[in-house]
Image (cartoon, rainbow over all chains, first blue to last red; front, top):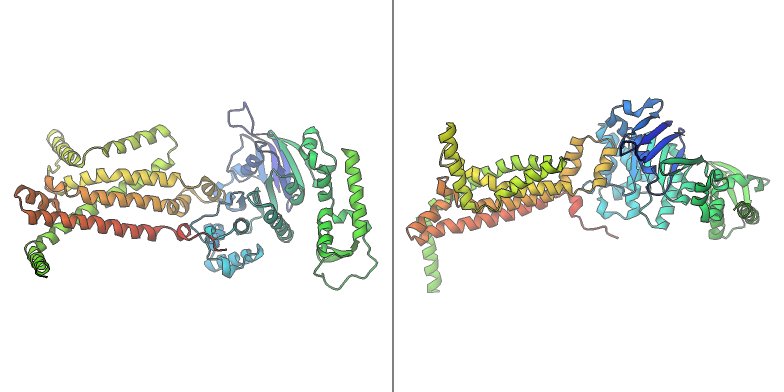
Length: 327
Length: 238
């Protein structure tokens, strides 16, 4: 768990604040998204966790220990870090890049090699093919995958991600977001995720903290954020995307009552299924892609029932109606 | 055919007359260059690193200014200046410095070779992508580890280009330090000039040119070899 307690950062001795009186908790295993425009203080906040930036006042505690009281090098090695510009070392191969922190931690060579292969596999890069390549020989999406693998290399409990998918085209970005969600559900890390993209925020976050001018505006799960913005700023920030956001934040799990659980579940998870945490929009996409009338919904390996297309459309109409009356 | 065989005869005679001398003087020349370059690198690379990391801009400007001042001084004048300086120090401070010889020559060569190496080390390090350095910091590398494992490899091609330029200059300037008794191929050239001995002049100049060309070529290879492969691979395939 990460606790920020009245954290301030000022670069001019207190006249203006990049971050002001920020108090929040990042719960163990959750993905907390820091959402805001540029200059909102979101990246500054994230960088104070691994002390790339040091707070002017206030405290940041990780598992109860003040980060300022810890050895900065050891602290950083225990926290995964991945950024928008990826920052892969151009003179190192993919394997060397991913193995940086394990090497710093003096892991045995064999252990590092095995970990690298495992991670490359996890992010969908065939180790045999990619180990020896240099960053210049990768596409943007592949580099980003290596960046994510690198941040997870030493299996840190906490990972900081600064717009990790920001520099990608929309299609690749969505693909990587989905892959990362899938990956994240298996590895359960505490993640601080910085983005300016509202859609990315509601998609990736268990909770979203909206920042403006260095101050916390609202901290809530995506659905609550979209459906009951705390103030005018948040309302305005989400503003024109309200309809889409409502469909994105309403998960299949939330309309679970519409499911038809009468049919006996198939013995194992079939090829075509809907994860319960998928949004209504993603469900709609799946129906469009497969042309089926109904699909089974799964939470992990457990089947929750069949979702019929007609029921999904009904739910969508209802959500849109609610969002319309709220606006 | 007659002209050609005559040419080869003359060439053979030339090597018979001067071969031994060329070998000895070329060796001296190489020694001068190597010693000067080793000392210059040992001073200039750490200096360049220190300057690149220095946050006080004024200090950087002053040091770079000092190094820059040496460059426009004509090489012949610099050699003479170093000799004068050595003699002045010896006379006024009683420090037992030689007024002539290899020490004086090497000092002048080192002073001359500093600038390209310092400048290229400085710019090479400064042009390393700051996000790469930041991510290295964020991952928990120490400053020293970042310098050795990230910044230096990325700056190496630029630093090596500076070393290469400095070496070629030094090979050229080393022909002048024979004037202060430091030896080298310059000895033959100046002797030849003062006695109108064309053979002697050629025995000095041709090897000097050859040394410069070969040195440049070999350092080019070294530069390529030292460039991290990730920086010279062709862009991604497919």
